[in-house]
Length: 415
Image (cartoon, rainbow, N blue to C red):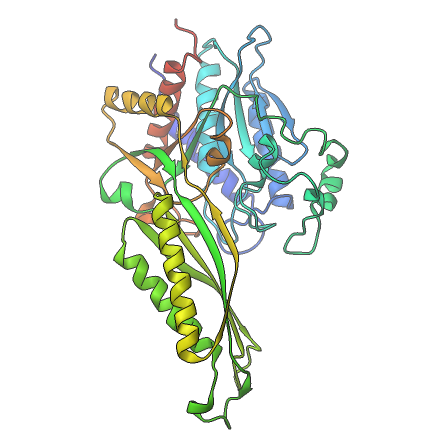
């Protein structure tokens, strides 16, 4: 089966989606925004044009379904997310939807019959930019989040999910369809950009993801004593920001010592009272650690917590450790991984088996049905940025890998 991706069509669809944005630098398409609604309408139009039935589930996930009523087997799903971070790029999420749509355009354009239905999914609220919780759309689909009080979570503008769904017209169906997809699919494959430097560094055009790493987040707060910045001698101070600064350096030091095994970041800092002429009385940080090795992550986290307590004793500061969250790593399905590798070898495509250091909807789906990811290189490893870029040729190759893999998964009827 020789089906070649239409590069111009891929490029046009990515460019169109990138133009559907709120004002600001780069692409800004938060879930439930006007630009998100325009993007949903655009994707609906494409899905309908290639003969798919379209539905929007109560959370806002868009699903395009092939129309074969005689196929009683569970469908295979493909796709990614439609929302973006603030000041994001054109490829994160959107590339995966465009690849899925290109597969369907090729299959339908060449009148190829299916053995299983195919669903193309455009997930809502993967980034967590609105509510601070990643992958909420896919979590809703499989019931992988709290059901109670979900409607009352509040976004960054103090608007509840309930209010958003009332505006969307789906609130009344929300609870009844919670977890509707938990047993729905035979398999799921998500195309995505790498969002890291390795594929480009290794001169590979396709990444086959075998695992999404574990993530932990720990809030560490140093308590000192706020006082006048001019009249308090240096030796009389209990400056919480000094404890915080020393701790941040220790986090960086630990991350560099275990390079390629972990990444460690302090990306959130709050000083109180945060005034130029007042010694900080409180310094709050959130430490994030990621690793494919769950045991190593736990060990490093405990070590850094002990270091924070030691810094507090050394500087006579109080130390409070809270919000100790950990999300375990998730392996992807070995059978699909072997199929992806087989396709790349047969097509003489340069590939690497990699781990994903970012969370994805495929990670949420993986405990419920066989799932996997295909990745393409990110230029200079840049993502979540207006400078995000992936080559159209690489995206076309990802389309080829996906469509050949669907064939080997017995989704496509042999001619």
